[in-house]
Amino acid sequence: MSKMQEAGIPPDKATCNILVQKCSKSGNTSAITHVLQYMQDNSIVLRRPVFLEALEAFKISGKVTHLLREVNPHLAFEGIEEDIDLEPTSTDICYIIDRELVINLLAKRNFIAIEHILTGMINKEIQLDSELLSAVVQANCAHYRTTGAILVFQYCLKTNKRLDRSAYISLLGLFIRINSFENVLEIVEQMVNSDIGLGTYLVSLLVHRLGCAGLPSFAEKIFHSFPTDQNVVTYTSLINAYFQAGEVNKGLELYAKMRSQGIPVAYGTYEVLIVGLEVAGKIHDAQIYRKEKIHLQWRNYSLESFSVEENLCNCLFDQSWTFKVCN
Image (cartoon, rainbow, N blue to C red; front, side, top):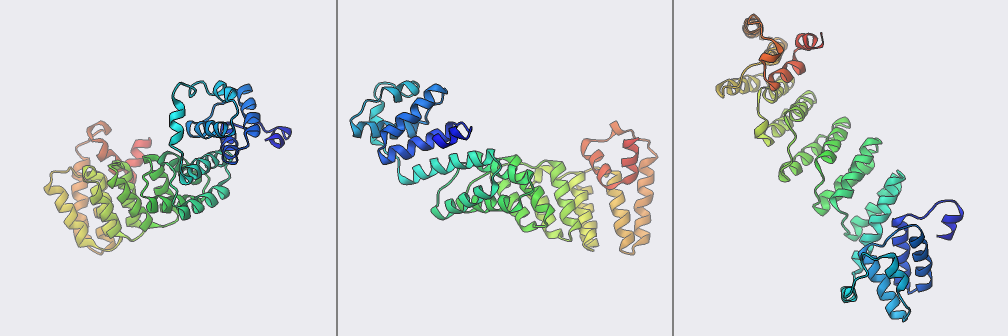
């Protein structure tokens, strides 16, 4: 601590807590007093578990604890000594220390050190909380550190931890970029199990991306994982995925199902059908849908005439519509 101050680096709350905890375990009450004096001068307080450890250390040494109580008035109430009997286990202590270290390293963007800590925690079966794991995931994804993000994801799978929605979406973007599609399905499965929705836009983009990658079965799983988001844009995305994979009959069957459920057809849907059938050599069938699209265009619908899903479908799959919107 003295070296940190000499170097012009003031110890923060996490550092002070770690120092007090380590000194409490070794029974070094003089060092605890030194840290407490610094904390008092800088309005820093201890975490409750650390306070209890320090209180026990002073009790064993037979020394007074006035400074400890003055620094932590929020914890120094009558009867708190009874909590000392609930001595934290070695696992609890390791968790507190490792968590504070991860927070400090995350603030300093020291991702390599965080990876080492997480690897050690997996081996020791110590679990971090979901909020901190989510923060680590997002920081790694933001800095394009795939190894760190994947490590956290594997850690979550092993410890059965759930992340928040933004962290899952960051992971989805990362795994899509590196073509790790099996991990995409694992993330979607965890989101479904946690009742976390993706929304129509993200579902359609995932289905479309998996279709472009030649993985219609994966796209199909994503589509069926979110039944509340089955609308014209997600249907069209899956139809396009089938056409991309050369499964024309499946695409036409899905289109027929969409129509039977009363879902309106958008310009983008027709464009997917026309292009897909032309590529498959079914020129006559493509002409039928081209005429239907022209008939729809003759109705002179404005942008406001379409639902949000229809407009999104048109923007994703019909270049002429995108041009119309932008102009």
